[in-house]
Amino acid sequence: MTAEEARKKIIFALDVHGLDDIEHWAETLAGKVGMFKVGKELFTSCGPAAVKAVQRHGGQVFLDLKYHDIPNTVASAMCEAARLGVQLTNLHALGGAEMMETAVSAVHREFNDAERPRLLAVTILTSSNALTLRQVGIEHSVQDMVVRLARLAKASGMDGVVASPVEIGLIREACGPDFLIVTPGVRPPFAALDDQKRVMTPLEAVSSGADYLVIGRPIAKASDPAQAAECIAADIADGTP
Ligand code: C5P
Image 1 (tube, protein in one colour):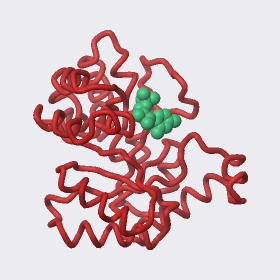
Image 2 (cartoon, protein in one colour; image 1 turned 90 degrees about the vertical axis):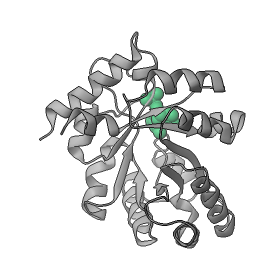
Image 3 (cartoon, rainbow, N blue to C red; image 1 turned 180 degrees about the vertical axis):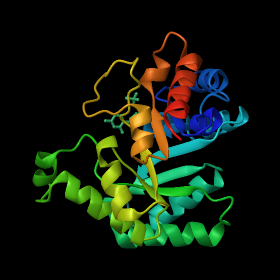
């Protein structure tokens, strides 16, 4: 893989509060990463201006708002995300097949394939374990639920899922080569683990089948963030055919 292809796989998590921080990171990492993730915290504080600020610097956006509501509401919200011009957006697969299908049809109806965002489903949050599931009445293992929900997402017309590194292989096997897999929880060899537990390196995650990697602190906390991003891309490029 070329370094440019490897850079495009990196999604920098904008876990920051204000527009000044966005401007700073969008400028610092322009051309070094493929996309910027705007999550609930940033979107709640800055709104669509957060997306526009990234786009002003030529950056692409993963709008990570994890919608979960009645089908009509989720479909309308996803169309609004598409109108913002983001490249990736997501919902919770636990909202069910009808919710996903309604969102997919609405976005496909309003936007042509080239300009619409890819629609991702979150299966089971990486913070959940068997106990978390049992407490809400789900008796299956996390792994079984992840595969089950990934299959349901695919059957509902979703473009891919967000999944932890350890789940990549199972999902690839269940959903085939064209289903997008976006993976947080990766740690380059040079970075601290922070609160991450079951980690892989970026190269391992890409080799296992991840299309995109969400990376925050290993880049944000590095003494030279742009260089850290370059190191990660070089590592992926050198280690893949
Ligand atoms: O740990 P790091 O700073 O690289 O996290 C980047 C992003 O990945 C965060 O915005 C967080 O939402 C997400 N994440 C996750 N599951 C984890 C850890 C982080 O989805 N176990």
